[in-house]
Length: 90
Image (cartoon, rainbow, N blue to C red; front, side, top):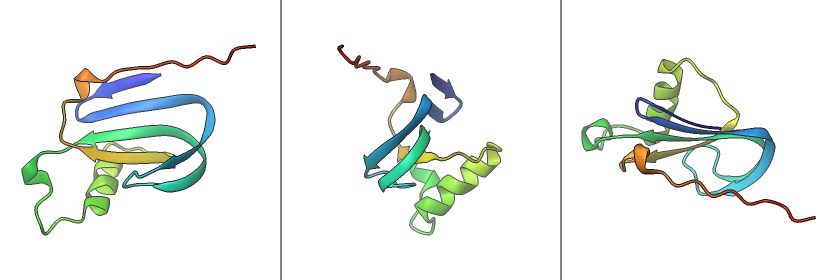
């Protein structure tokens, strides 16, 4: 399922996945991930004094969620995402 709310885009998996990513949060090889999160930021959100990882975690805590996933920060509009579904052929 894909959800957009406020400055967040969430992709929730029906079952956990192993992922390899360059994500800010949970990057590299991670096993049993149940979601991928994108958080939209503006220039004024991430000044030179702000640690991007701390910013992401504080934003996630403000959202009152703790997830086993990977997370990205982006400045692009989240409403214009594309969904691609791959199906296994039997």
